Amino acid sequence: MFQKTKALIITIAGLVCCTVSSAQTGIGVFSASLESNNIAYFQDNGLGVAGPDDRFGANDYLKMDYSNGQFSAGIQIEAYLPALYGYEVGTLGNPRQFMLASKYVRWTNNNLTVHIGDIYDQLGNGLLLRSYEDRHLGFNNSIEGMSAVFSPTEWLSVKGLAGRPRLYSDYTSTWVRSASLSFSLDRLLNWDAILLNLEGNFVNRHESLDNNPSVDFSSMGVTSPELNMYSAALDFGWDALSLKAEYAMKGKDIASPSQQKAHRGAAIFTEAIFDYKSLSASATFRILDHMGTMLSVASGVMGTGGTGNSLNYLPSLTRHYTYMLANLNPYQVNVIGEAAFQGDLFYTLRRSRSQYMVLHGNFSNAYTIAPSQSDDSSKRLMWMDISTDAEIHWNKNLKTTLLYSRQEWSPSHGFEEGTYVSNIFVADGQYRFKDSFTLRAELQYLASKDYEGDWAAALLELSFAPKLNVFASEMYNIGLTHKHYYNVGVSYSKERSRLQLSYGRNRAGYLCSGGVCRYSPAYTGVNLLLTTSF
Image 1 (cartoon, rainbow, N blue to C red):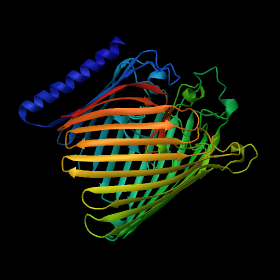
Image 2 (image 1 turned 90 degrees about the vertical axis):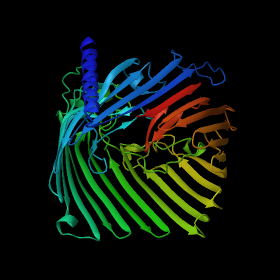
Image 3 (image 1 turned 45 degrees about the horizontal axis):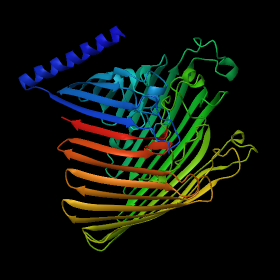
Image 4 (image 1 turned 30 degrees about the vertical axis):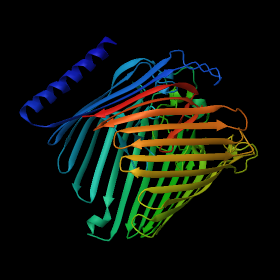
């Protein structure tokens, strides 16, 4: 522990010295950002849960970056004092931590970039590898190691990386290596009207499983410490049309902690987008067959990996709502196997610059693909959402939105027959009385004969631009629990700083960001959130 603290202090001191020296000579640029999320938890007998033992939680992130010409460097310090309730960084590790979470140095010129430290990268559409940070999820799977990108010409790029991935507060014993070749045919042939890019990717995960004598991995079909994965991707664009496609395959692997048998994996991803004048349409189709890839199989099987134990990026192909009741039961991707589709259609009817209407329709669904996924070996529906909404700009001051969504989902992820159906109605209105004062209100209703029955929700928001914002919301279960979930708060912004104070009761359920979700337990508390950059 002393050695880690000493190394952290030396790293911070070194960066500060470089920054001060650069500031004195007028060379280089220093930037920093701070995010501090603090919650005081209260006992709430009406909620029916005990809450955390420690009645306080804080997630703090300090990021500092320095650049000087072709050179750049940075660090991120994280403090959990302790970790916020429901964040796996606290439940699967030490809930109280102060650590150097990431660090890097990078050098780049016209055709070569070398990066040493913690790496954030994505290959193709993320089917094989994506390392990224999402603080809302408490997720950070950066790869500590070295990466390089070499572009000898404008139409050819080669990149590779090697390192060990981060799993919450520690790095795993796993090693990840990858290589990618990107070939731009349109640049090679000087095509101006057409985009055509081809990409090939390779990822190797090496994990020694001999250190886990309590688990017989060979009986699960894992006979080698090496896992190899490959993909080929296409990116095409012409006029108003763009197409993306990727095919991926992987060797025998355990795709999910719930599995006890290794399988080979494969995935197909296709996307088409058409955007012309007032019309915009998109369609995405994806098949996943045992494509879940854990950073550490050993941690997953032992139950210590959590949601963050993921090497690739498999978000749900569903609409991402901002309304409370439409997000009540979000879909969770089935990495064992699913065939999913999503279609979007936008059309704008414009009368003038300030008077127009945007019509939007969305459809998404997901089905099982393997006989083992259902109790009678049949393909089952896991998710379906049909939604439509109209956003009307009546004039420069008034805007209204009406939304309807029919959601059908399987509580057993398609294993058993039977689904729940919800019909969701939303009315959203916003009126700007003057440039500095705007009022927004929402009314929502969810009608269902299943699960917890009907819900009602409302939100009121007052904005005194550009500094002050006041809001209050209420979500009430009419059908079963008769519980209120309320939230009131105020935020104040000045230049690049924002402070928000809120109090409320939060329902247990899944919180999602970018199609990836984590489970959050129910709690009542006061939340103080500070973000600033300088």
